Length: 307
Image (cartoon, rainbow, N blue to C red; front, side):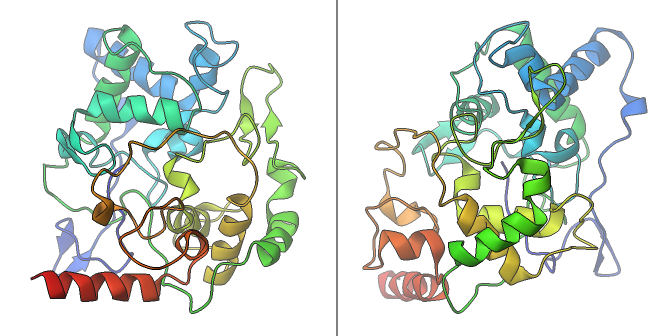
């Protein structure tokens, strides 16, 4: 969710033109009373989604067993970990993917259907209200239209060649398999109701309609957060390794999401969206793995010609 900012982007959260990082509010400052209870429940749902809404969920069985925080790290609080800093402040807004104005609750529903491979939660129930309350509390200091350094994930510089799934497999085996399994199956928790480390492909992983299925998104996420212990300040992978392992992960089988109604205005499709049609002559293969610079340059040329 949210925008993707390059680490060198300027930010309103800055002193003397030196950007400072967004910092999530201290959970010890969650208010008391019913409002605080709802916020805490929302955080719990984000951190342990499967416990409540997974295949063996105590409230409902509507997701694949992953937790929201598998993609939104530290319950949406980690810098460059797909955080929730500006999420609530940005809605309602026009979604280029759906072609309509969406509420925050509708965007969350899409995550349930795409990233959690499940069905839409009832937006009138306590669970959706709690998730929204928690996200609003996390982003309470971010105003609408404000760009904040460190939100969502970063974009890596484009490579001159396509991201390489074969080379990425070597990175996965040496750097990722110990946590996510040799076959990307993830690591189940002791209670068998959720994953300690999520599956990266297969029937219980995110669908091909999820944001992580776009290799630009996944590469930036991996670079700043993986393997375990990596941060945006102290990454453990090179840019090329991040690109390649992202390509490998997204070359593996996963659930399919019907997307025939997505991106009604084809010109609005992201350049790494791996399914056509496109407003250019580049192949699905190149849109999936790159190189992306020629696609970006062609888009700029078309934009200039139109204006």
